Image (cartoon, rainbow, N blue to C red; front, side, top):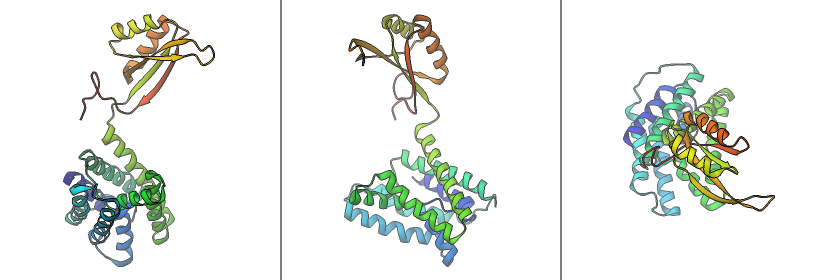
Length: 267
């Protein structure tokens, strides 16, 4: 949580805040407040994070634990500590991209440690519970309001840069959480299931799972083979299946993370 918060704070102070780019959240609000009042962003973040946490504790119960409480305090502290860092660029596009990457990297590290930085994420959970709106939509409402406010306080162009930063942050979090180990899951339907099964097991050296299915038109029972392969094994899999049965029906779908033997170890 400390490492992730430091990375987020450094990105905020080096890229986002100096270029008046609000990507949402309490940090975005603090950028707007600093422009209007000159108040240090860390003070604004503490002033919002702590009451939001206490309100969430009251309305949602003690499910957040110590980590959310610590996160609500530690991120503003990191913002205060890193406030002296220089500004590498005045280009708002570069600032939104690199700021988004830094914030996403930091948040991803915090999430991997099962932590939280509090703030509007907790507010979104309260909105989700008491309105029935989805959690993702609740988060989007708060971030959208912050970015819309930045359009009014700064310029509409700043708000557009804020959207770019928010998008980059989201994608970076996914990469930190899931990694680059993308794989493909294949479902194979064929009249030569046994031959294809042996080819995958012994030629491709991959395990597989046999699923029971039935034809939607004929109603006949048939076996569906499911196999997960790495990106560089996709062409070989298709070649093997085609060599056994050129009429085989193959469905390939991307999967972001695979845990288990032959892939990534369980965390």
